[in-house]
Image (tube, rainbow, N blue to C red):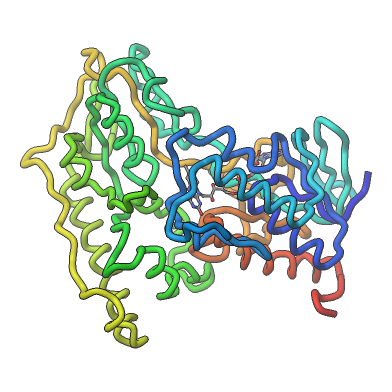
Length: 415
Ligand SMILES: Cc1cc2nc3c(=O)[nH]c(=O)nc-3n(C[C@H](O)[C@H](O)[C@H](O)COP(=O)(O)OP(=O)(O)OC[C@H]3O[C@@H](n4cnc5c(N)ncnc54)[C@H](O)[C@@H]3O)c2cc1C
């Protein structure tokens, strides 16, 4: 079968691309292994809410229209939102169709699925940037007596064996799971590496309002000095809850969560934590201060300083005098380890030589390197800092379909 563009994945990114392809009358099809919004249906924990507020949930030609613009969607609400979007843009989605192989054949791409083969001059990889857990090598040395789980398999605390839990990683996922699991009555130790501290609100406005207004989220990939590093900056310590609470390390220690340094190794069954916890936290506090300075400077320069509350700074991260450096994993004290150490895409089906030594896709702002007509969307800092968020899809999808149309020699959107 032939088409012009095969879009792989019917998450919000693939659907946003479909919207722009339809507007340009580019014949295409969206193949999805599960249902629309499959990732939100099958790979997220029950209690998760978006950390981005409803007013920020917009896609090309579509936006949140409920009566709680400042609220945060639950998982069923996110699924319904993306489902409605798929219907609204009448996307040509083939659900239940898994792509098993993509290769270039005679100047086009052959996309093999478990339900047919398509050939197309262009392919959009919208298969997600967070398909697999990124588990560190030290995981191999964890004694078998300890249960291990990734956030993609975690659903709720009562799924875990009774006993204490070590959560490794203190970004958005790690702090949320440490909080939820601790509230379920289990002792929690949180191993903290580099992290991005953020208050839920600042000067009376949601932090995402500041990120949007000051242009942080719009910073482009070609303006960033160290793009490789930028693409690996951890997700911010943020949670979306009805009470709009800030969930940072201070909030967790107030509850009784124990903080330790980054998990460096497991030797003879003993977890060894880095002694750099104090430095890592001081650095996160410093960077937060710089971000708030930037917000304040923007408020002054743009004349809104008088419309928002007065500037203030957050209490520095509080730490025990001597955080522990070791934890004997053979003692039975820790029943479960949660690897909240990040996620990565799965391109195991991609038979085109476009991955680097570490399995990362080589691309320039989503235009895949060395594979004319192949594009990617939905990855961290793909084209902008907001690229991996729902509200980041619109600009990236517009840019990339424009590039794709030019590649095909198709007329412009308005022409
Ligand atoms: C825990 C977590 C919380 C997040 N919270 C927020 C938030 O609060 N706000 C926000 O804006 N963003 C959030 N994000 C980031 C981002 O919005 C989501 O990850 C989102 O799901 C990405 O959308 P996507 O369309 O790019 O990819 P996905 O939603 O992952 O969609 C990719 C689709 O491709 C399909 N697919 C993959 N491989 C194949 C294949 N071989 N064949 C066929 N189909 C395939 C998948 O089934 C999936 O449906 C969060 C991410 C995570 C991991």
